[in-house]
Length: 87
Image (cartoon, rainbow, N blue to C red; front, side, top):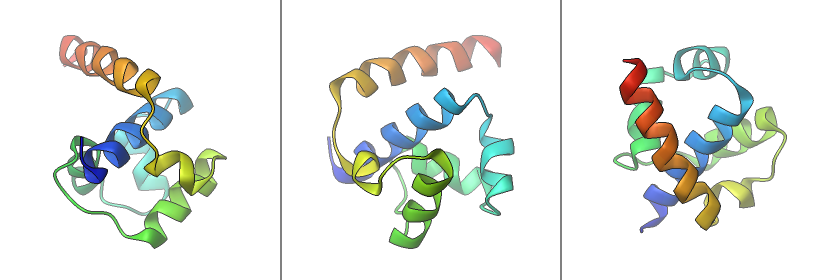
């Protein structure tokens, strides 16, 4: 797993834990939800400034967004499945 994928996985995990949709969470941060969906999939880069802003909003450290966590990887798979079902 590369760093973009780790960041995307963690963003999705923590956003989901916050109980907010991509649309609501990222719009509140004045970030484009469609672009952030690409970030969460690990297919686009994100700036350090945005990482810091998102971490602050989530109440976590930037370190937590860039560090691989096996629990988050497992949870992301479950989240992906739930989102497919609800679509």
